[in-house]
Length: 367
Image 1: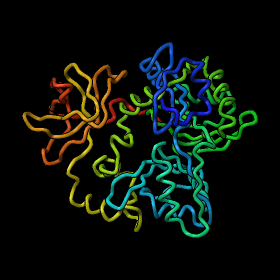
Image 2 (image 1 turned 90 degrees about the horizontal axis):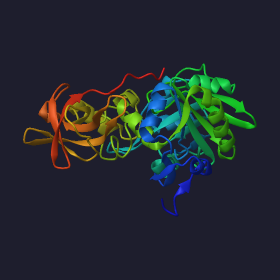
Image 3 (image 1 turned 135 degrees about the horizontal axis):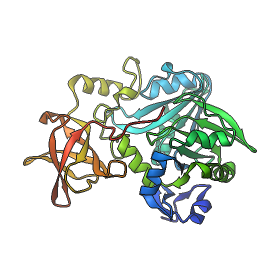
């Protein structure tokens, strides 16, 4: 932690729960909690319910006449595919096709879009939108005005129902609700691969909402979970993390997130470069790797096929669900490697046998 790092409005609750902290995008956030650690928290999410504080995630408000149309001209996905009350995964690219950030867009209507970027990239996303915004469209960085709490797992619906919160809306949609004096947004979104919800709460109400969720969740096996478990959960699902599977040097075509690109749209940032790359075929592509030998791959380790370096690990961990080492890796397409191919990862000077697989590593249960 550094003295310059921001803190969640729930920081004192995390301290009281014995959290171990780490820096994420300029924020001091809980990595894991006393009394279990990453594997216990991961397992709770897969089997019961976990409660995450992800208030480090950004919040950017775009308002004004034509706000939705403006956002649609900038970000990759097509907002025209969804209706007000729905959310959409999308990408902010630069003109080279590199990814400035991946984010969720919440469509309120023609004149309001609420964006949730990653912590470290919020200011840059807001800056780029502000620089391009037409007259009458305002961009407000609301980063510290809201907290975001994620309730994830097969018992998540029961936890929210116990508090009288809405739970019957569709995946990737949201609804406004009241909990005590707090007005919050209940979103059917998440980053774990499990059925779950994300609550956008005014920062001043975050502690009261957190306490209510902890109390309501106790009969359903809910436990606080840190960002360590969030990372193992998302890696099992093959979900990209900016700075690892997506970056200014890694395009949507390479990262297999082309499904979040509105290819038929006439305009979005990076369109020309991405269309050209798609037509030519990217020089590398994201795959999953599953260890057949003993060892845990980590980011930046080299993937080998015989004597040839054929790729690089972008994320690697031990899978608490599968009980094996798993990784996401960018592999050179010129090698012709495909699903089922045998490769090795150089884990600190020792080659670990891996099989090329197509993520996810576990069955998704988001819906």
